Image (cartoon, rainbow, N blue to C red):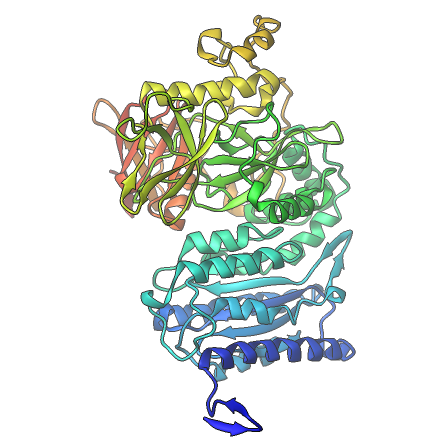
Length: 621
């Protein structure tokens, strides 16, 4: 210590403080240089701005680090093939050093060469990299592609395992990765994601898909991009411009996808578009041309009213604890990971639900009539229970009280749903009568609840009861395979609903039958790959063509049957993203939940289970 005018000054400040000050200074310096750099137009492209955050931490492993550089290089090479778009690229590295590696530029070869000076190793201060990225995110850098306004976007190539950004002097390890670091990262990316899409590309030995999905899913227009789809992602701006040129008005009646594809064929008859191109163009149209743009306001509500998140504001909407799946007006790519979720709140804005998916990501979705009187169902209520994998308890679990702990005169119902689960074992439960209360499930070794068997008769009745309550006001708000179910007074446990049913007891829960415009693959697009594919008309016939990675299910007779091409692709996509995930498939008009980790499928109607298996590079099972 040295003394100067009576003030004690450390000879060497704390490393954490140095790092925080360094990052703040870097961000301020980057903001100033970015503003100054705007006048040097010859260094910039005329297209959208992309901020790449490259994770170089030791947790990736040497192969993961190599993969990061290869993916980044592939994207740059694809950018160079589309000079008419003229993308701008800025680079931040995140590892032992967090710094701006390259300012915005369209000189892709120079950007590639700048990676030669990047050092591999160190921790994963991803939050510091996002903080630094704010220096890039200047509002004047929002570009216009056709009628679309495209703000600067962030592309994170990482394993999604953040560490404390105040400590840059240790190597990454599981001991340095804490829940607090993940929470800090999510809070920062939530604010950035309100106006800037965040795309996450998982790399490394064991990427944390849950964290990466949360980061991308809570941003406007962001999503997960698999490493194999990196070159496709590089065409994102090109597809955005294509979508902006389509002369179409969305009606939000469940058939806009067919309208968009038809408009694409008519507007660009000589162009060839892959299926992924088509999906991206459709997503762009929904994001920018929807008559009900609301999500920014809703996110502001959630941020400002977080203490009131678990509030049921509209009794006509699905009650808290209701299970949902993507609905007829879904246009959010794989934000749900093709699985179900749980309603955990109603927003102040009319007809907006807060849903927590079984992957733990949260977002808001429209349900029912909007202010414009248009009915939108981005999610629909279903009867799929929450199935635990390695968790002790999770949001969406159906629970009962443990009567060895509580007296019989407790003022709660016998069955309810967990709508919030904290890491310390505190659980918030919404009971069937709408009453909420906090309980312990593992907190300091205490257990106040019992988890119900998800396939028990009482659990099934509980979920069906929620469906029927919704169906009274919103027949189109339930899953299709429930839409031919007669409303049975015996199943509606809430007496207050009987008067509503009485006036409609002759009605069945049906959707309006509107002809759907068919757009067969390969017919309207110049795509030679699709011309020779075998039809899926016979989904489970005795003769079939086995794909490279084919999934099979076992019948009662013990024979192995292949899934149809569509179902096989759906299962394999989930398997590639998370081998422990589950997915819903359809076989002979029956719905099944495929539990990949257990190699079984469960009939959602009969609860009968059967085996499944994956055959790789084999002509027959």
